[in-house]
Image 1 (cartoon, protein in one colour):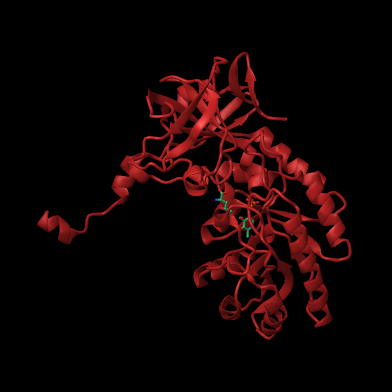
Image 2 (image 1 turned 30 degrees about the vertical axis):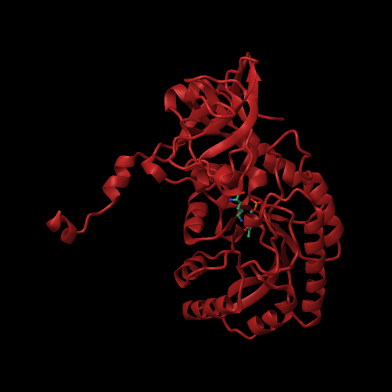
Length: 423
Ligand SMILES: Cc1ncc(COP(=O)(O)O)c(C=O)c1O
Ligand SMILES: N[C@@H](CCCC[NH3+])C(=O)O
């Protein structure tokens, strides 16, 4: 069930007309649906039925908004984090430390110390150097760090190169063939307590085969590690399941199919399974609402210039990502247009030669499937304010992050005294 639907000729989020929010908050603005968040969690939980005590650690990077995190915390989700900041946000939103998994290739000593202090569930180590450093930080704090190694299974994930993480040449994890030696090394370190193994091969995966291949390799590794005396109790299968951005393309595999594959592959593993979904939970729970500033003639197609830009939603510029763009009050007339933002780069293009609802200056449009890696990746490029975020729940809505004006950014900058003197 899509909670962004046309009713009486205009687009609603749950029971709230998007135009009502645009009037009050102004555009651009991100709008999230609570009902969609809840539904996605329930769909995933039910797809994982039969798996004993799974830990679903939501990948905070996809959408770290405090209200989104609090909603997911109330549904019992944990967090997959990649920085001290994400640990702080998760705890503040009510996600207990024992449901937090700390991933990432560049954890600093300060971040390790903080994560040990709060008592996270697991550190996913990505190198021997990191294992050594974590061991000494833990020893100096008088604790043992619960760890897994993230292994790189060298599997092509069949997604955009910039979000593929499990091929041999990527920076992530340790080569799966080197894993037994890495575990032997870690087991001799006084500050570590080995508990698991982790894998994550990429994001927006639209095919289960590479995941199945990777999990099969992990299963073989678990058996080998156990035969060498390692205590493997947890297997972290990462995230990565894709969502449908373009309704005209084949849909990515359903959570049900994913769950079935996971049950089949992990049947004899005898571990606690951990999952790190990001996009699957939040992707379709959000839209970016924007207003057409003007329409300008173009050589091949008109340019629809909207008040959102690549700084607000950078996925099209960065990954050539496709987001559906719908008029909030469609007239029924379609045309082919280019949709661009006001930023001074040709890359500030959301769609080229797109067949879409015809719009004119002042009309509202919604960029669909903008709940994941959207507000999270926004910036103030071109001195544009940070876009506000709004959460809808039934017929109520609230601003969950206000527009961050450029004034506060100017105030945060400092002109050094020596420069002032010469000014
Ligand atoms: C280690 C790790 N876990 C989980 C995720 C979440 O991925 P997704 O949003 O595709 O589910 C990512 C991002 O690709 C990641 O790097
Ligand atoms: N930012 C990427 C996904 C990154 C996944 C992070 N591990 C996207 O929008 O598709």
